[in-house]
Image (cartoon, rainbow, N blue to C red; front, side, top):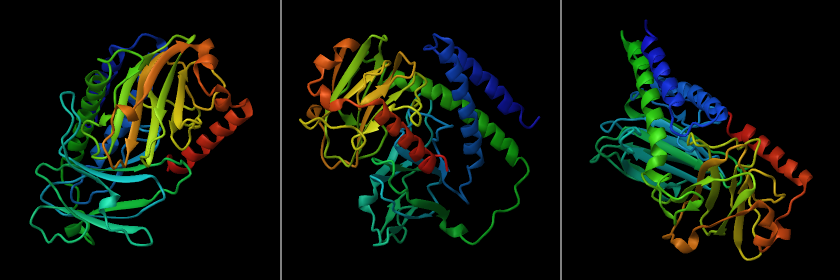
Length: 388
């Protein structure tokens, strides 16, 4: 049976979900099954997009196919490439905070993160006055010229990130073509192609699930709960992205106050993640905030409050029934080194003590009506920019 290999992989993946070390409750398991459904969709999409001759960009993370602690502020696009061909990427710059490009030499695996062969943002491009741009990726020694970037040995994927600080910003557009295939058509699919694609989907499903069950252990869970690291260059990530990470564990009567300076970086964002290493519901709940969305205190600090209960504060991040989860701060499009002075101070407090702990507590207050307006704005923005 053509689909048998994928069916077997789904059964194996379901067992991995059920035996995941963090599963303690029925809610954990239900969310795991939902995660699995998204992983199946993504594995199939990935397998059917493995065309190096006629590549196209695929949305790598959406609200329904989450993976790898996806950033709610980012649109991810990926395309399969090979290191001996030349590709042209054409687009129009939107009004978003950052547009970046990264070439990887493979996929994430349970043993390692793929090597980043090159990473840069649009500050390295020549962009026309109307926002249009064109760049090429190809082998060394080619007729380079402006906006030409060499593909290192083993180049296998081009990943593009468009990052929103203001969720109402205008997204750009982007496409990819292999230069020697423009104007031509693919050959008739060879015999056995779909067997290979189902096998690739099966392999991707199990490998990615194992990877992202192991990934938090590498970078998060060895830290004490309710702490965060100093800013550091994101491992395997962008050349201009710093991050601070941690994980929380809170009872209903406890809260975290996370204090961080307002940054000079064009993008600064904070989010919560579930134990499945996924973003939480960021459309219908405030589980993330950018510096532009957050309320700044008079001393140029942002004070986020992480709790299950509603403190009536503008910078509340909702745990949404998750007593455990991940914490992630990102700074992007940076132009200097970030140090401990740029990073967070984390304080665990009793929920009822928030008013006395927060130095500008009255300034942070928000009414129920204002909160509903915030959620309505999030829902509209997600519908406008993320579900297309």
